[in-house]
Length: 134
Image 1 (cartoon, helix red, strand yellow):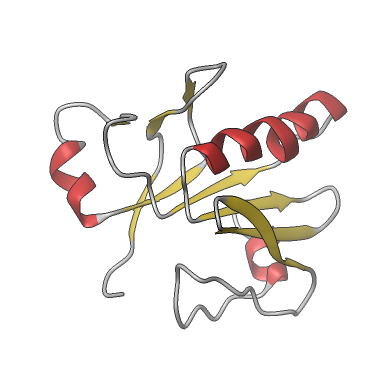
Image 2 (cartoon, helix red, strand yellow):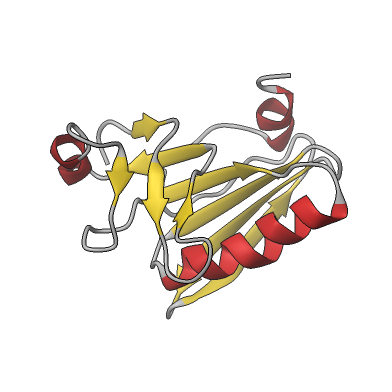
C-alpha cells in the first residue's frame, strides 16, 4: 500500500444527523492530500477515507454513539474499515465493510495482533494500541 496517510482533526461529512463527524484518527487516500489543502473536510462528493478510528469515550451515551450511531454513519458513507478503541473494555474492535455492511473482523485484546484489511503487514497488538496516548 505504500505510505499511510494519517490525519488528526479531519472533518468528515456523513449522511444523517449530525452531518459532520470528527474521527479521532483518519487514514486518508492519496487524492485527499490535495483536496484537504484548502479545508480539512472530506465532503460527501469525495471518496471516503480508508479507515476511521474512534477512541470510545466512557459513559453509556458515548458508547452508544461510537458503537451504534457512528458505525451506522460510517457504514453508509462507505468507509472500508472502522476501529473502536475501548479502554474501558480493554478491546480494539475492527469492523470491515463487506457488501455495504460492517462485519466484525475481530475484537482484539492483550497480546493478540490486530488484523486489518486496509493496513497490510500491521504488527501491533491490542495492548500496544490501548496503552498509546495514556
